[in-house]
Length: 63
Image (tube, rainbow, N blue to C red; front, top):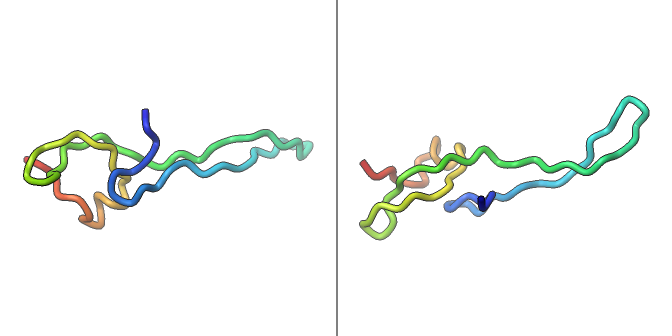
């Protein structure tokens, strides 16, 4: 699955998890993506869109 938003191209961020002894292990912060039917050029398409773009109305859902 492509972990990238169709609208804003937001992708995963990378960082480190720290244990109690401060040992660092790699981790990734995935964006909150939803697979929704959106209007792309007048036709419906299923794309992954982050919830911030859905809430802001940057994409129009196809009904």
